[in-house]
Length: 291
Image (cartoon, rainbow, N blue to C red; front, side, top):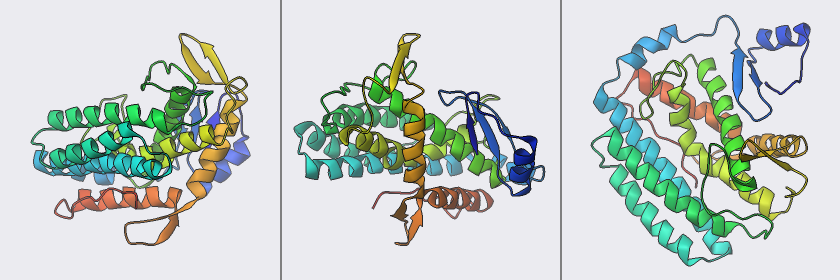
């Protein structure tokens, strides 16, 4: 359960959630997580030892597959848009992302992987802007801290709430979110969440933002506010965005076995797959890829 801003729930509701194994996360209006309540029996001592024992090679191989999946999902996302609205920029980016994905599979260091991911993201977002057909929304480049315009505001907010959702699912599976393969963990950075969100950015958040803009559900004048040198969803835009975000998680998609399942269940399945990899590194982790 995600509690935003000044919203409150009763002690009885909290107790019921914890009894039913439902974690509670308290977030700011902009999606920053202040903290979480977890059922008392949940924890990651059991698995953290196995995570710490992963070798550098084990982690590099997993990191390669994660970045490859992100680049391939970005490529597939653009291919779908290219069929609807052909663009020369998208065509060039699609070819480039294919090359970058191949190079990611051969990268010998995490630093090299991060460089390939950064190059792919820059090109992808350049093409992403051309997929928007609502003239009220202009997107030239990705800006994060702070988000510089309404499209960046929606991307940042979406990534933040998806990150917090994944963090909760990771903890419920007993994994230590601070031991990762790709990103560097710190006392304040749950790096495993940053690893596993990569495969879901394009299929969940990017596709949602594109749909909200192109269907004119979001209003440029009513749903955003500007302060602290940035653009953010306001009290009108946030509930609207969250409503459609939750609907997106309920939608059924095809998994790697060709079966249909809700996106929220797919994320849990992927975390369980990573858990299997931790227990048995020879059983390589296979990230989710758009079909």
